[in-house]
Length: 61
Image (tube, rainbow, N blue to C red; front, side, top):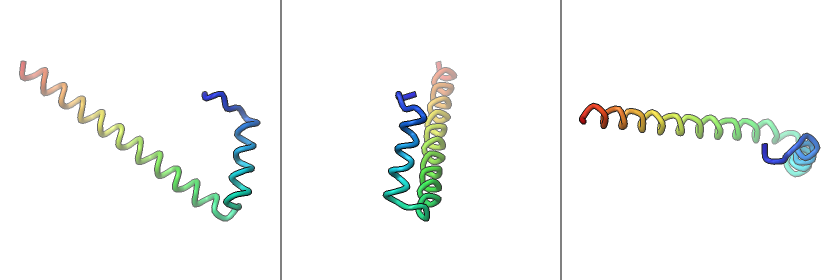
């Protein structure tokens, strides 16, 4: 992926646990999941709009 393997991910997870604590981890995970979901939704909507516009352009010719 980006040259990040399991040891690096574990180190990052431990650092996050130290900084935020165990109590905040579910909130952070939920916020991250919602952000990724919204990003995917907006990308799909943009692709659908672009596809509709190209179809309309082909019909007019």
